[in-house]
Amino acid sequence: MEFARTFRTAVQRRGLSLHSLRARLRDRGYDVSVATLSMWQSGARHPGRSVSFDVIRELEALTGLAEGELAATLGPPRRVRRTEAKSYAALTHLPRTPFTEELASELCERSGSIGAVLDADGRITHTVTRSLWQARKDGARDATVFFDADPESPPPEIRGTLGCSVVDVSFDAGLGLVRGTLRLDAALAQGSVALTERRAVRPAGYPQEHALTLVAPCRQAELTIYAVFDPTRVPTSCRVTIEEGDRERSHRLPLNGTCVTHTEFGFGPGTVTLDWEF
Image 1 (tube, helix red, strand yellow):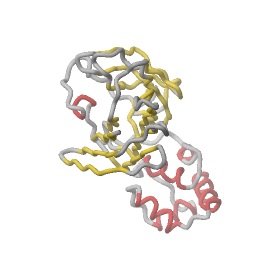
Image 2: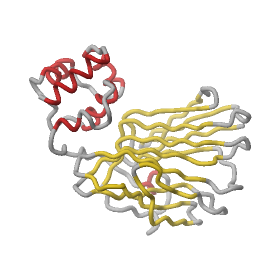
Image 3: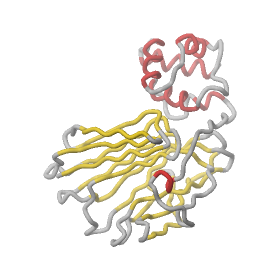
């Protein structure tokens, strides 16, 4: 009954109707009936193993609950939903080499974002990558992460800034790629989640870049890509290109002041690339 009480209190506090909650879930790609939501709220039924972990996370976000607050009421760790996955190398058209090989997947990304901050010269000073990870098994802690890099410059400095560190960092100039191991601050139990943030800081004099790519190895609930420009140097145009399987689509994006943003829901495996012109 703890799930029902927590869910019911949150819905009432936000002043939501179950019809509006269902509509918002559908907008995010999750089809849950009003009848099911009503039974969850009354305690007549609670989410079973067939319910996606991502649905619970979306309910937390929509009702203003803290991340994991609703999931924690369901008791023992939930089964981790398996989804189609592709390697970073396959999605970015890189050759399979020992450098691009990845660790056996203990963690899977459920949502994430990447953002770039640019200076008055139009150069990226650093990028910020946030990921919500879910453990596939007890004791999960490590995942392989990659960053694009200029082959003729010193590589960006990669460091964990929230919930993780980035260790065993190496650079392959031929591939223009930095590889590292993201290590959570604490190991997770199966089904548990952890939010991490990592930064890639460019050294002084790093070449100007005109694009940023977010790679989704598996299907994720929500992916956001953005760029923040210096107010003295904003782009004349911005565009996003989405590649998923054999499908590709592209369109222009408007600036919101000095920032441009694009979000995909229920996306992956695939890539989202943001580019701009000055």
